[in-house]
Length: 523
Image 1 (cartoon, rainbow, N blue to C red):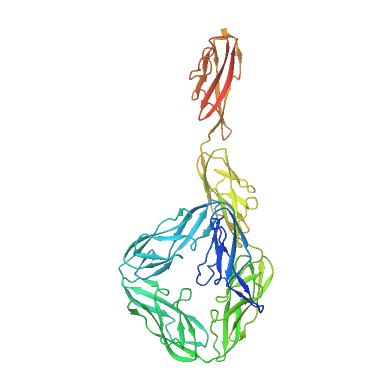
Image 2: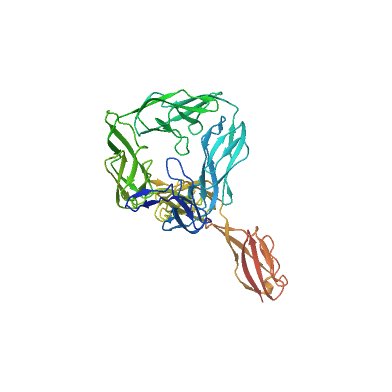
């Protein structure tokens, strides 16, 4: 458990055409206690359809659109439980109005991790900061706020966000020189705010974008496409600016040319990608005026075989869904279709190794068995304990069987770093600490003797055996007892027991939870 899975949805229409509808469908999980599936759209990549494991079990994932429901896909969760959540953010201190994306990473008991950003419930401790369901925080007033995330009973560490009293001084947008776009092409603008204390922050998603003529050049203020300008018709001198509070940036001019798209070239033209991984494509247009702008976000992308790899029709990011096969990737705009790029799918590749336990203290002479869990590009997490090669950084403290992962502690102090490696991928480091050998057993001698009453006494000896196989005379340190003191007295510190009468008595030596016995018969 601990790996998110991104599902995609492809619609087939009555005319035989297909389209990626991942961000249009309504996703559902039949058992949200097992796994949650997101219905929140992301920016630049999928978020809808992202499935997050919650607990061990099985659930069915489906997608619905316009009354049509997909086949059910079984999602099985195995392995450990969620034990902790760590959150992070770009700016621990900001000026008022800055937006920033928090990230939440869950760690599971089997050592795996998962991005839980879109699955957790986000919380803020004060009105100085607001945070939405996707983890996007906005600094709204001077002060301090503790940000936390919760998921099925587990609460994250606290991330403190301080909002200073610094005020916005200037807003700068890029590109900041005159831009010429062919009709229909898009251009991403960004905004940076400089505050009175000299700090600068990305305000692209915080400002309000302005255009002097939407008919000529539109610019988006919608989530997921903020600052994205579109050339709508041939024109000159459309002014683009950005406003935050009372501060407006300098104007950038956009001209829209009548140049005609002649060809589209997409790259890379050939690629082999492992199942579960992504590949981003770019598209360059050649126009009649000789210009060659990047039109990646302007074209419509398509994959000839979505069973092999799906593609985000807007961004050109593909996700490989199969372990073999090929698909043809193309881009089209204004009736012009690109060259064909061939994407070949291959078997999932190992991306990380998690070994457990992460920390252990073991007595000299004892062993510690380690397990290794691999995380592959397709989200699977098999046990690879017997496939990796194990190593100990300090064999003088603990050696480890390179094949089985069983370590043996050979020192009474010190530590060693345990790692596992396969195919160039190295695990996290587990720390194994050696401690003094501990008592394993006690032997009392003579064992079960038969003695004459007139012998008077018997000398008993207690010998301890330790985890490192050493032995020691512990006669004077054990606690002695006699079951029948009328026959045999309780031995003293020296181990001498007095014989009182005919009969038998079980004499016991005890230390550290271990004991040894000898049944003494007196005639």
